[in-house]
Amino acid sequence: MKRGLRVVKTVPVTSATLAGSSVPENEHPVWSAASTYTKGQRVILGHEVYEAVAETGNTNKDPKTEAAYWARVGYTNLWRAFDLSSTTRTQFDSDAWFELSPGQAISSVVLRGLAAVTKVRLTMTHPAYGVVHEHEAFIGSELTESSWYAWTFEPRVARATFEYHGLPSYPGATLRIELEGGADAGVGVVAIGKLREFGIGVSLGMRIGLMDFSRKQRDEYGDVFLKQGDYADTASFTVVVANDQLNNVRALVTSLRGTPCLWSPSDRWETTTVWGFFQNFVVTIQYATHSECAIDLEGLT
Image (cartoon, rainbow, N blue to C red; front, side, top):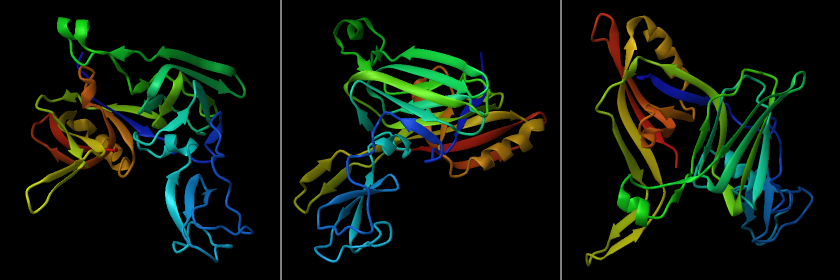
């Protein structure tokens, strides 16, 4: 059955939203204004890790503002799941859980950058009604192509993504996300949000690709230096929209500016799904009853 463009607008995860987790945030001590730090020591401040770079005088120097004394390393292991990037993972052994209290109704859970995760369990609990929803899914492996040769000889590839869009509307509920896996399990993105769908359908002629951030350099002798880096998905397509819905669609897309979303133009090809943001949105009012909306997407690494 033909459907429109589906998009999950995410709800930002903050310290107030994250009600709890089994993943500790103690890989380094918390920064203290009363302590003196020497070069190479690392501290945690506001879910971020900083490393001391000054030899002396590093007392009461705020890591967020004193660049001469501190260098930002990145997010803590716990907070890597909420930094929007699939390539920086929250690592854990065997199992982990996260409890989120968004303070508003949500319908969707998006997990990206899964590593060695075999099962996902979702439990939504409301303070007045108790457990209102449960869902469990096994994360298996898949073939890279569909053929007898691949079935016989090619290795299975573990799935790195998970989506669920069946959460009921309970604005005051808490969502518990439990992950089970191997000894080196991890998750790159844990996101929640609301699913929206608009348009009559996505036209044929969709273009998908990727932006490669690998280093490719050639010296004066013609020798090439290659270092593999991250990449970002890209997609360009046209959505057919009824003219009486144009104002609503434009308002929806406008509200998604600078917001990480999960864009899903097709159920048939998972590779068309993009975790990222839109770059361009152009409407062509071409017919009396419907119009064509061109969208360019750029993925997050």
